Length: 275
Image (cartoon, rainbow, N blue to C red; front, top):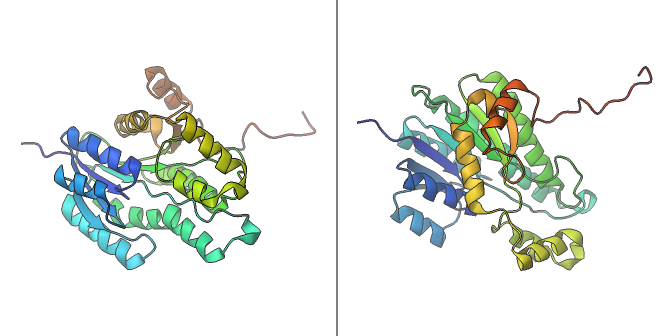
């Protein structure tokens, strides 16, 4: 009997984390994940067979303990998915409480890198499929959204780390998915900041009123595509669940033939007096 694939989800109690857990359980995979605080979603996940471990990403000892528990549970994992997302602090950088700014980078970027370091040695390289490390991107790669510098910088750092890790590890896929505007709890932070933050609050309210969001199904399907897509098509890349035609098989061929697609690049945006 062939054992089921093992999926590890960091911050499984997030909306996307919970949706992915339910999806992979329904496909017969074994799923385990971490959580910081108890919620109704955790009870539901436990009832359908998800294994849960406590983890506070701001505490190194807690993170290390959770990694050990995940490693012992999995033995060898097939996919490691990171779902933490912290928008705080929402403020201009010169006005920010710097300790909160640092904490945001730790939750969104530093702690996930700590987990990768701890768990990468236990990835499953014995199957025909390649193990996958999957992150989620955020807005700001192509613009400069004010008030969200910690969140934006950490997500851009994750995007570059996917490329760096891909260059270093030839037996593992590293992919980052931009989910777009998905109806999740993260928007409560923007709403709580109030009308005084201006456009971000206004845009969030309007999207909620009009229900203009990327469907969770599309996000989950995009993640599943990335996990099963060829390594040379997706590893080291930033894929948009909302805008990219990832469900078009022609895209895979284009990505394989164009290694610089969907990566952070200044190339092509240069000027010279010699031209």
